[in-house]
Image (cartoon, rainbow, N blue to C red):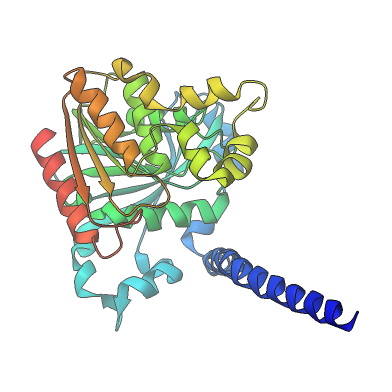
Length: 342
């Protein structure tokens, strides 16, 4: 009996160790998110929509800017600390000195949606790029902070373009009505005095890549687009990452359980490549070591588009989902692509 008890205690101890190792990265992730949001309290990104904004926006057309507030990175401490030393940008981020950033609020359907605007300080007329970030279920200051942080992955685009990055509406449908937040931002861009309305581009990373494919399906106003590590088949994605179904799709997509197959295929470009705007040039980029979105998904859509002679280019890099240690490469790749195609 004592032997069985000892074996049982050993098994329990091993299970506890295993659970600890599995739980630690999850807890660490949640703590980092909590700490990031906490540090944004009281910053420019903690601005709330005012009563005047709410009263005035109903009469405005979709895409209209309700408010715009310029800010410096020094006003966002949790991000500034990573970019700076001794009160100025680190060498790798010196280019940001030539870029202006603003927090804007614009109309999308019956909602007010936040976005980050980045543009060259030098006065001129530029092409515009709508940037669709990855991630989901972000709200308030956290959504604004994460959008700004993600925008830094491609911020060199703002050396030669006006870049607008939506924070998405709080009622996230993961490619449902929230697609309007992307499409109406095109209208927003066209109202800006320093934007050439005939030269509109779009880029999306991860979930933002899915949004970009959807935009190319529903809009004829995008001249050039780029997708980085974007899913192209959600059914395959949830097979490989079941948590994407339980924690994202099932929670965010309306009527998911009753129309699962339809909902997933509507968000998966592999099922409708012929519906993409053929007047837009497309760049597909993936990381060969991506464990969040299998790079095979990028290969599959590239093959389908090649088969129908769609204007697509493809690049694969030896890196992961976030392009760790390859940021300079992806920034240069995107800047060269849009400079040539816009």
